[in-house]
Length: 240
Image (cartoon, rainbow, N blue to C red; front, side, top):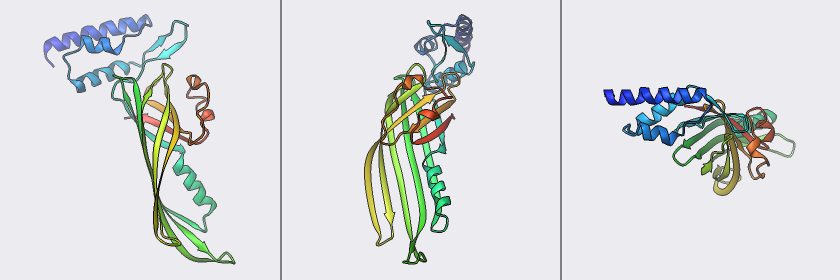
């Protein structure tokens, strides 16, 4: 970084911190305007450094609110009570007649700070063996079944409180070997909603509500009440 850029960066950060002490918000377009000579990677790095100050702001109503995540932030989501948990619980219940061979989960959230949109990539894969039982309940043979659920959602506006919602299109492909080998595909639309923690953008929460309607008052979601509002699959996400 040349001396001119260093001077601009030092001046900008000084002004930014001074404004934070007065609980005022510095818009990201202003950051880009002041530091416009940076390329995209430098710009994203700068915004991460600024947000990492963990600053909070005060709204006109006197409520403490947080900064939005930096442009280009990605989160990886973990199953808390989602599809994988459901299948593992099913295996535990049918332990004598079901063998779960594989579970795989990939859920990634992304934030576009230029447009203020959240997007989602969703993939689950399963492989299991199921018993074919006779009249007296005896196991006569096993059949094999594999299936995957892949989908995406995009252009979900990130609200001031950190919430977002939108439809997710899911394609489910299943292959089974009993009573004969068949492959089927089903397309469905699911409702998803989530929350980026306004006090710590590194944490986010996601609910795949299935075909249930999204709950009302999503603008009142908090990390503390989010799970109570999720009627179906629940995931917790961490920024890369």
